[in-house]
Amino acid sequence: MSIGNSPEDDRIFPADDRDSIGRALQQTRIAAGLTVEEVSASTRVRIPIVHAIEEDDFSRCGGDVYARGHIRTLARAVGLDPAPLIEQYDAEHGGRPAPTPAAPLFEAERIRPEPRRPNWTAAMVAAIVAVVGFVGFTMFDGNEATKGTATAEGGPAPAPEKATSAAKPKPVKPVAPKPTESAIAAVPQDKVTVKLTATEGKSWISAKAANGKLLFDGLLLDGESKTFQDDERVDLVLGNAGAIELYVNGKKVADTFESGQVERLSYSKGDPEAG
Image (cartoon, rainbow, N blue to C red; front, top):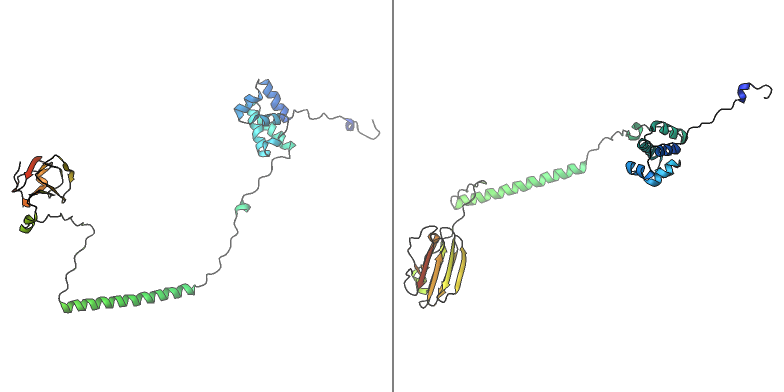
């Protein structure tokens, strides 16, 4: 004992006997009967990082934020209270950084807008466009008036048709021209000539020559016509006979076919006769 010193100055203070963070996690894990692989599987913290933390190496965590998160996760996995370990980590590594106030970072400096100057160029362009448009409209109106006067002098102008956007024009059904005497005379006398025209809708037709050759087999749409010739005979099958207008050797065949009626007909040279 030195002279002048108080007996209390010679007391020996015990050192901090707390386990390190890594040792506390390791001992608690071993006491819980868990392996590093099991802890890694349950926490999704990679095995090398678990080993490093248990050796108090936090450099592989990627920063203090991740280190605190790993410590908290591992502590809960082995049944240890994470709060004291986090406090110990902050004490050993400089503490948690103070949060930076967000207002100064995001507060934008208010800039007073400068008074806008009048755009004389745009005003001049607008004035020129207005003048050109007025002159063009005046000339167009004068031309229309001149045309109207000329029409009035030559005779009454036809009344304009009323156009309606809603009403659509009905399709005009093509009408097959009736054969004249000259057309009948132009038909070859040494052949059988059969002309079919669909006038009341579509019809399926089939036409064959005398030797059995297929001349046509298909659909004849409304308004369409087909003409067939053979040296001896033309055989027909009409799927919708009421829709067909029939000319044989230049003469119209009067028929009483009904819509949807199927007819089988055969024609040869000379005056038409139904077979």
